[in-house]
Image (cartoon, rainbow, N blue to C red; front, side):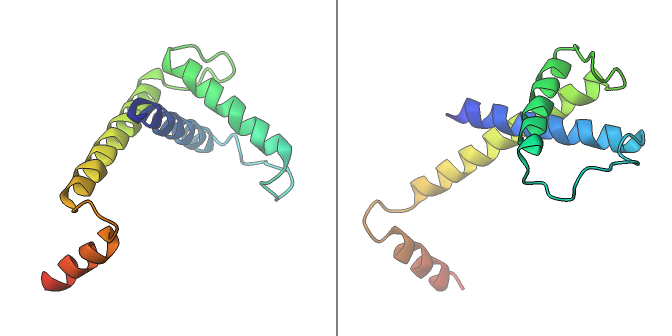
Length: 115
């Protein structure tokens, strides 16, 4: 599960890197699509962007030759590693709490006593 979460976060970081690269190059300066981002075409565009990012990670980017494979890989690795670290930290924190039906109440009591 952690690996799947890491891959998902890494792909999200790739998408952000691709969009930032395109904005820097002025590819969205004449964007004339409707304002709504909830159209079905936007959903499919986002799926296509994720697929394009996965290919770009491996150095294949025929649709956008201006992408930097090194930047794409760095973005994925940052997203993947930070996701794993955050998930492990949350798991470790949950192990500190006593196991009973009142975990939230006990946590709030501990926080109040720590003042």
